[in-house]
Image 1 (cartoon, rainbow, N blue to C red):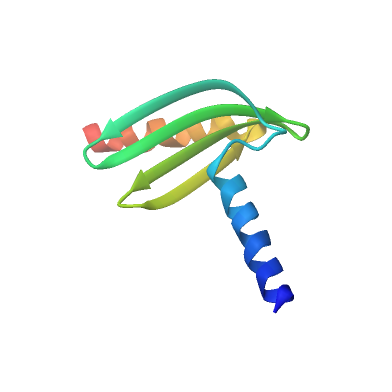
Image 2 (image 1 turned 90 degrees about the horizontal axis):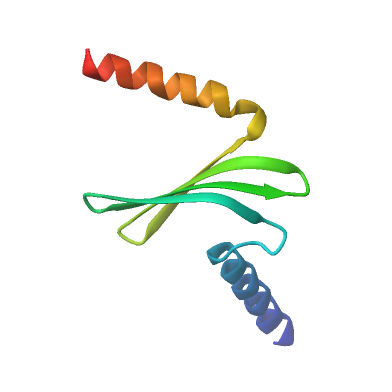
Length: 89
C-alpha cells in the first residue's frame, strides 16, 4: 500500500511542477493572447541548456506546448511568415 501512495505523490509533484515555472528557467519575455476560446502564452525562457521559445495553447482545459531552441527560432519565424503570406494571398 505505501508504494501506491508514493507513486501517487510522485505523480502529483511532477504534475504540479509542470503547471508552474521550473526553478531553473528564467522568463526573459512574455506575451499573452486570448484568441476566441484559446489562451496562448508566448515566452522566451533561459535555463542551463540555453534560451528557447515556449508557446503554450490552453483551450477547454487541454494544454499543448511547443518548444523551439534558440538555434531554430529564426527558421521557425521564417516558416510562420511564409505560411501566413500564403494565407493572405
